[in-house]
Image 1: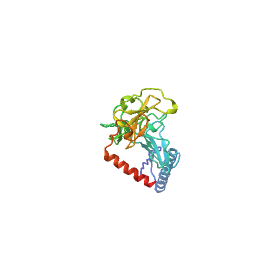
Image 2: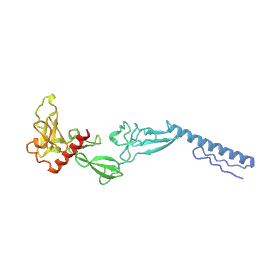
Image 3: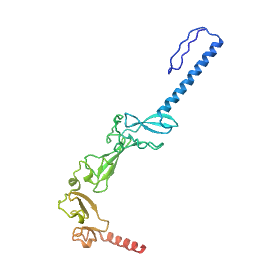
Image 4: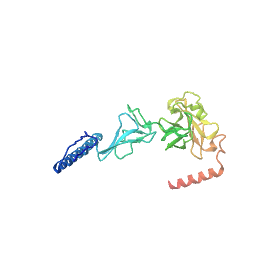
Length: 265
């Protein structure tokens, strides 16, 4: 009887052609069992080499959005969702290891997966300004779908910090154009603090000129208006032209709340 024996492809394939009896058949079966055991051992050793620790996340040496996930010593290659990068500072298992690019130092891991843009999003995931470099709104992209957000009044979206920020802190932002106000540039003594100027279009609003040149928008609390003579928020009746800024019913409600608060003190 002629036999052909093919050992598993990870090892050298051995073809034997000869006549055998029952004892030789048993020998061949044992030979195959030994090779199967060697294959399993090799796989285990390979897994152990891929996992510096039994559980954890480990950076790909070349690609910033790729990583190895090790669970119970078993390694599995993984990719962050497109637009996010593997953050090698978040390796504690099972914490999610992918972050926005602005939060990750890729170092020499410069390669990334191809971008997957949509109608409104340059990447599947990320936060992006709506249009120009100086916007009070931004887009949060999730799975390629853009979710619009608005910054508080007077703030612009800072794409480098992923937050709403003073416009003078946003690269490329024309602060004067964004706020529609320019600081006079008058020098003020340091002990007097940053100079303040009223908003000519709104009694409640004012501008603080940081370092005498960088305007930042502020508002007084409800019930108050800005007093340019004192540089502070004040009662409407104390500021010329602002005594009727609030409707009477609003002022009455504010007075009632103040009386209630005083009783609690």
